[in-house]
Image (cartoon, rainbow, N blue to C red):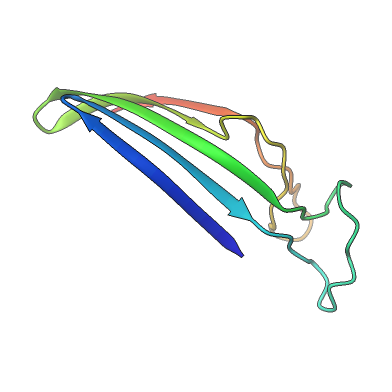
Length: 96
């Protein structure tokens, strides 16, 4: 199960967003027998939060900063076999 929610606040030329995402326990074996958590390649449940702040510079343009995985939650995700499943920690973006 994946669930997410967010809130956006607009005040004059400033827009602020904060959101979160919950991903429940996932299994890599058909019979769900891989139940050990907190080890490499286990797909533990996790929650992450993101935030974004933008300033409207012109009528149809804004500049902003975004932080994904705000609290630097380490987690794994399901990828192709043979690939490293560890996800990046906190990530910053600057752009328009």
